[in-house]
Length: 366
Ligand code: F6R
Image (cartoon, helix red, strand yellow):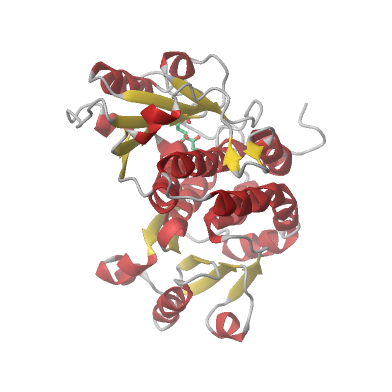
């Protein structure tokens, strides 16, 4: 049942090109330059009337939500707040009939996320969920659903569910942008064309597996890791750190790169590997200067990038290179090395990768 893979987690990492293609299937209307979400159940008029979006989730799904904020604000120009469900449900959140609350949950059964849904609905807001399990509690109680078609996820550490959530959020942000008039037909068509390329890009990213394993061997005995990213890669830094903590039991922190000098820089010495997400976008120079700050304090920089040039080489100890794609989709591509680095370190350490200690796949109690 592991299909020849050593662990479910590895199998699921490798299933991502297929999972992504399934999540996209039938949803891109190329000719119309539009997106079709079959179970959204909210008409254009209702969607247009929303003046705020709340995204509510836990754990890895919350990280997807943080990327969702960038997407919806950029493509639909709507204010987005992202909350951890256990915080949202208890803080008397501001929800009006013009608030759209988006719950993200792989299992569709997470207790706090379900309670967040009920809180938003109880206040008269509209509720859409992004779920992987058909007919789960969260899916059933939502006004509309965008299903991710990742297929069953067995490994406790979420991988393909996360990247398909990111894809679903791109589709949703495009849809919202079309309805609100902030994304024109042509731009939507271009984004659709890029989305279609994504499964192939992920296959190419997976080809770096052996190179990532080599880096894992060098750092498997570190006691702490720092992950840095800016903009839409900041949530991917958080996700990389969470994956490592969960399955290798190594302490790791994710930080927005620009925040490093406000505290975590004190941690840096020759024993600290720093994983830096370096997409080729307008943040690049800023991130490179953060790498220089790390190296000036003898920290070890592992750069994860889609542009391997002398500037990166001169400022990193290791460079892992991945295919480039439109910036909105780069968080999906760079999630792959986050997963594989954690996976290989955990395997080298001999932990129970698929069933890490103290964790459950579905958290149905608060
Ligand atoms: C991390 C992980 C958890 C879940 C969280 C929410 O790898 O799997 O952090 O993301 O428990 O679960 P769902 O998405 O089922 O609501």
